[in-house]
Amino acid sequence: YHRRFYPDDVDGTVPYVAPISFAAPDERYTAFVDAIGPASCRTALRDLAVDMLQNRRAMIESRAGAQPGHAYNRIALGPAVEVSIASLEWAFWQYYGVDYCGDIPAVTANDADVFAFLDEVAPIGDSDDEQVAAFEAYYYQAYAQLGYPADNATYLDAFTIYSDADYDGALPTPAPPSYDAAAMTDIDTWVRTEGHRLLFIYGEFDPWSGGQYTLGNASDSLLLVQPEGSHGSRINRLDDADREAAFAKLAAWTGVTPLPPVVEKPTARETVRRVPPALIRLLAKRR
Image 1 (cartoon, one colour):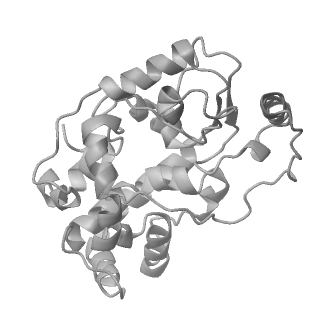
Image 2 (image 1 turned 90 degrees about the vertical axis):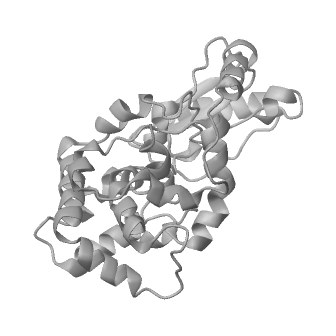
């Protein structure tokens, strides 16, 4: 966005896992998420989410309510639990990925293991007052300009009990603003027609890659995808040829030969600042 208005401020730009949405909601994400990863992994996630809503809701609410340090005034505990379950599949692919498919509990697992998995992958506390307040400006801007993904968890519709109104407390205003696509259309047009020295990095299995940019006629630019990558995709995790191409661009743009880091693969769950799952529910469920 900065380059759109100040294109010569830097030698080049490397946007990591950057989506662009064109609607509120943007339906492009739905088919993308439906095809992420092995079918067996998707099925395991969805079966577990159904089981949580259908059979374990009271247990999860009880355990979440006993966790210290959380207040649920803007979004009540019940809706907070439901939205965490509804966002489980998205959160799993965004923050964890295919290497952790074996960690998904079976529907026959005990309550402790099921709750621990949910609270690690899509924590209920991410919808508490503190977290929602930290992201309320983003909620508003997603409605007004940024757009947001369409809901793909329609397989849970028969088991949800809360409505859009139960999530309105996540907004800083009484009602959501109307969506204006002009800003995102402008950025997209600039990238396609005037973009220069852009190096986009995406993850193959990151749900946000359903909204990746299109280079079009952008000059001296690349769009590279980390195979099976999540939202934590990085240059040093690209395939060899793509990684070399990325470092060649950086060297050409800066006049400095980068020192490539040791090639690494994520070996543990990475701690990242999460967008509260209420965003997915609040935004994507509203039509």
